[in-house]
Length: 478
Image (cartoon, rainbow, N blue to C red; front, side):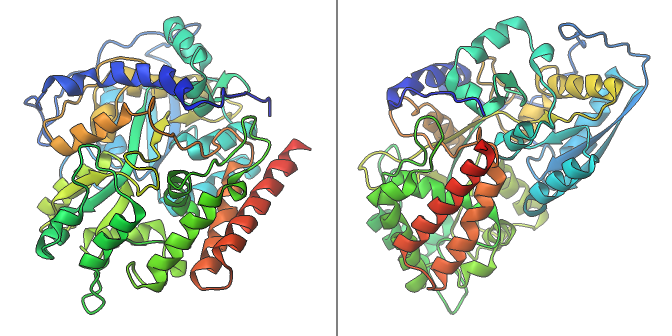
């Protein structure tokens, strides 16, 4: 991989922050949800389709596309995550392009990486994958993704290419391979109702930025943990690689730096904070403050337990608020469930590590020029020429365009505010741009399993994770 050096100073993230601030301006002026569909979102007809630079899109041309969609977002009450693409987005597309058929398959999170890598090896990939760059950039490193520069307007290209923070999240070797019109903020989402019922709401973060120390975090978990009822404050899991979002965030929140500036080394083992973070996680297991046997649990299990009020918080973004709102209506979420976004516990008072993500959606090289052209058009159209994508994914545009959805929810307002902390707080750099990134993720969770069952110490666990990760980096540098 061509090396792209970062400045090494947190303040260089100001460029990203400026874009995020512009994008989030709509949140700061006291907007409220406009009248619209049953989910409370503004509905507008699709804008007239515009030909992308260098492409000719004949409405009479026939094509058939296949989309694989991860379990992200809902647009209407009663929908399961991801169903909005088939139910809402594709019908709008066919109003504009009736001859381009689109087939949609929803892929569970714990299967997507294996399914995609198998498809790449067998040359049976879909035309489009709707997923985030944490997985998809690695497919670009494998040479499987189409370059998207020719579908983007020149003014957008200039903004993206001059911002290294965005480029490293959406590009491979200088080529944009992930649609950049998507930004989201990840945090912890807790069910405040559990703490109210325990008379312990005062143990939740009280400061405006909702930061807390590891000790405060642990005290809050103790207040709701009830072994007899099977209720815990948090679910740790280590049966699939989805857990790395939680664990990497905690490593950085405890002061670790995950990579050196040119991504040639995973450096977490060099930081004392890494061992402290893993020791903290192991203490939660040993003291019975999290759901038992995390080595047997997956991210899907954690989400199910959260819906059932069997845990108090999960790693989440804005779309999870819809899961609660819709789930309370259809019965898939147990009541009461009053949600609240908070930061990851941190050893730095008043700050935490931020998980700010840019980019969503890729198109695969299929060898069929017509399908490749329409796949890129579908991606661009879905994020720029109608309002459904932004409404379903609860996202905003990091290039400064006003999002189609507006917020009256104070919790989503807090998440928006958190997105603008990138110039002040550390931002988790999990190494999306490294070839072999999915293998690095897969290297982590067996070591977390061994830690949780007591086969290794925290020091040994971070050493093993680092060694395996560096082996992956070295493998792809040959």
